[in-house]
Image 1 (tube, helix red, strand yellow):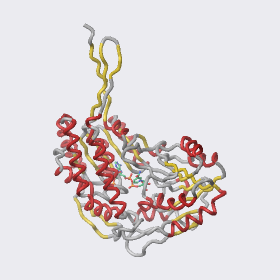
Image 2: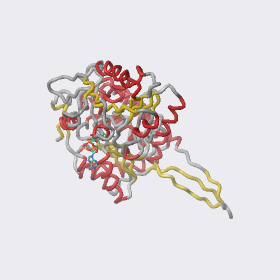
Image 3: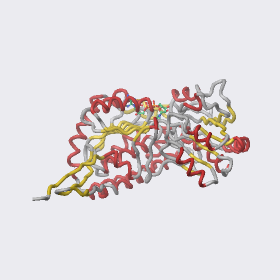
Image 4: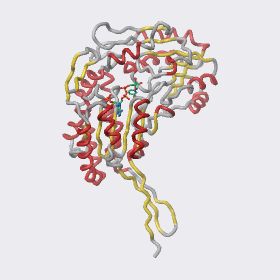
Length: 452
Ligand code: NDP
């Protein structure tokens, strides 16, 4: 059995059966059997089933949010927002089956046309930081395009995925179309990646595991999309609305206790306004409410595990230039206080490695050229923010930064209708928006000879 721990109390929240490689094989064969009928279902009917699923997810929102908040240790308000987006994601992709359009292409002697075909059985491997949310970004376009799926949640947070499997069945998704296997990545995840009947793996998690998945998938030429780590820059220019930049900077890195691949964990501040920015930031950090995830006004909960807390603490050792420290509860729970380090040497581990905890590194810069150079001085390229009142600079810098997602005078990265994904070692492929469907379909070109 898997003992599922509640990070805010360190107590056992639930026990669920631990799946093994045989369970993966059984799930893949169920998904394979269900595939021909699911791909053949009339597009409007597939759309209707996905709308029913979105309705059922919306109806179960509060129960799912509480389960996610307790299992992942995230504030209930965040969990509710995530469950809203889960339902909205299914609603958005319910529009897709009838809009998977092809092309006609002028050629000699006949007619050429393209159609989009589903891939078959798709394996989805997701992490513990946004368990059902990240799963929905993969599930909804995969199912809309006519694929069947095997979903592997992280062992730390399997509960909402298992609940989702029941909700999908009750909402009229046919048997075998959605299969959930909860078990260790090194066994269950690896078997999915190696399984010859799995056509594609969609993965979110660490760059290290992503690399091993890409290598293993090469054996069967599996399609792979990877959403990996990040060390995203938050650029604050001297001409920015400093109050807005400083008041929103804490939650851009401490949200989800910093366990967010989009966390703006490098705050790059123009030297001319550094002192002013730091004093505004200090007030903002002091007001972050850290505590019981089930309280409506909590903004930050505990880390996911003791291992994660130790990993984060290893960055904030004796030498770290601690400039601001927030509060965190004492006692049981994997708590870690919001922490701001300044000034951080751009060559140091603090500036280069993904900490994945509530720790921000402030790095001063002198001018626009240096800001761009520092922002790009990383193996990652997921997201970032630019704060300035100069519109031309905002667009110039946005074009110069090598990340898949950027926001200007805002710290948001994710919307149902817009593509999300990374440059460089943050991965490849795009989720969400119209682009995600490309990752769950193959283009087929058909030529029909018309000349007698
Ligand atoms: P992992 O990459 O190990 O886990 C992500 C998922 O992959 C989990 O479901 C895990 O299963 C599974 N997995 C692990 N090993 C394999 C494998 N060999 N084959 C197939 N699947 C596998 O992330 P961690 O939980 O270890 O976190 C480590 C670091 O990764 C974090 O500190 C952070 O830097 C980064 N990370 C980034 C995330 C993002 O959103 N981009 C999300 C999570 C982590 P299981 O856990 O059940 O063993």
